[in-house]
Length: 221
Image (tube, rainbow, N blue to C red; front, side):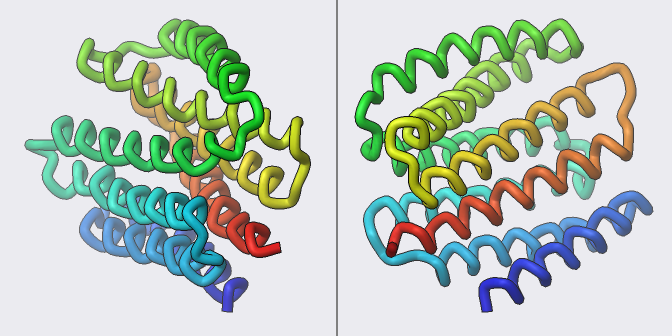
């Protein structure tokens, strides 16, 4: 059942990318939402029902909602910027839920968070050299990238200190999510939108969410 959902998700993502490229934005938004429902269902199927698992499932649900919001900006272009910012806020909530799930598993949370703060500063300095964005987007970007970088730092510190299948799969999923977000930012606010980067962004994102959902299987072991 789990692998069937993964295949359905991949198929929906491929059709979504084709439809979106042809600017059929309503159909694309529906397809993207259905693809995201797949990783939510995968998380529910894999979840052992622990507190950590519930927080991760809530994060998956939040991500699915944000996916639809981000694409609605093309359906309602007059309010596109506002819808995009709301979508980013919802994604931020998802990152916080993921962080709340894995931070209690850390044996040295101060180190994980401290390293994450340093990496956030370095990553943001590099990103802001590559893009041009309005102040509101930069403010949201600082908070958003900060949250997902902290998540990655804690996740990989957990893996380093306590190697396990769950920590490994979750950390890789979180990393793919981070790289996907960086590609999204560069593509949206860089000098030129590229379809190849859009495909990269979406592909990495769904691989990341699917891995995060699959990691829940290992919590029961």
